[in-house]
Figure: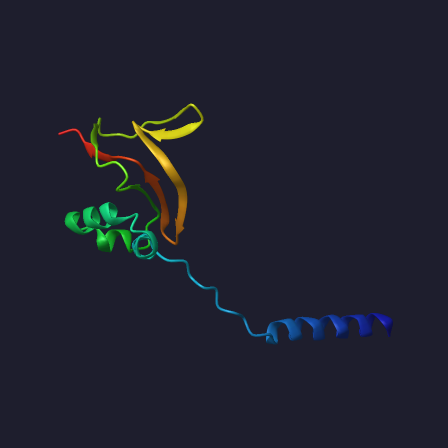
Length: 125
């Protein structure tokens, strides 16, 4: 009888949990939405947004693929040519990719992450 009462109580608990409404998880913004949101508050991603639009990459960065974006800031308009690949490094406690210093890391998006850098990286060409 005790076993039956325990089994009945367990079944009622499972049914009670299953009947509870499941709250929808709020999806995080895509890279495009995150960049637009940050830019609306700070103006920090003007260069990134202009480059994405000019290159026709809005749909790509608004999709489901997991991507990493390095966003140049308007702080220093200097440009540099990379060698076609990115080389991460640390100098004096600061993180760099090629010669661009990462000034803010890990702006999360549902489809990737944005790292803010202090220069524009251009492929050598």
